[in-house]
Length: 369
Image 1 (cartoon, rainbow, N blue to C red):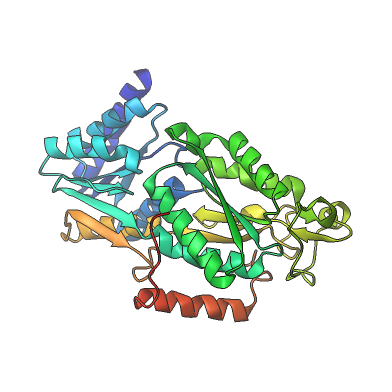
Image 2 (image 1 turned 90 degrees about the vertical axis):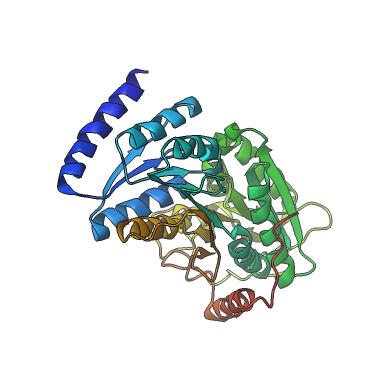
């Protein structure tokens, strides 16, 4: 209770100053994992910070330590007359909807779900489209033809990631096998890296050399496992699985990798999600050596949040569903200094061509398992 009161007082002080200055005031309420989860909460925060810098708005945020505090955090912003309050994550739908209906003269935003309230802009994403692209890269680059998918909470939203990923993998390599498993069925699934690490280990034992984790904070367990193991060894491959390619033979390796992965081995990779997590695969602090983040499926929550704030500032707010796919630059894949050596220009050209076919509707990406 003390924390909620403190937050309310801080919001009130900032709101009074902003109101006096005629500044657009935006409140942001995060989902489980917190503001700096290196995933979609952080992406929302970065969109707000960009708006603060470029649009001159004032940004306040609230990180509930318990889900029960969420509605109070949203209500605090509304009670202070904030122009826009954004709930990050589908779990905030009920709270955003309730407070929005209590305050029909204020604007609200919701990430990852659709609210029935008319004064809520609901920002949803075509996760399956971006997942298809990273799946295609996984299919092209897997040395074993076995890849993994680790989902966080077993819900339709994450099924979209799995469906697109699976379709992309099989489009690149029809003989490939995709192993999928979820961390759990409750919100705790977003913050259980230990369990995700166990799942990654089981996938490696079945021959998976690339694992895509759409699991919030739990995804850190997959990254940690890849860091711990670094590679697959031919002697440890299960029956029926063998090395079919060696795409990274000429990529410069770290001293740690060279020592741990001598002999007939192939590197392991993770695929990041939401934010660009490629840098997390730089295990030796040297971008010039092989990165273990093959790529990241970008879910541009930052772009969606920025666009919504800009609409409010310019008097163009509109409630209802807003969809962000490849066409709207709402999803994509990441190529940067960390993984550029892993993905040759020929592969990028193929992925870009597929991207255009999806945008044109020539490729229909499934959104269900």
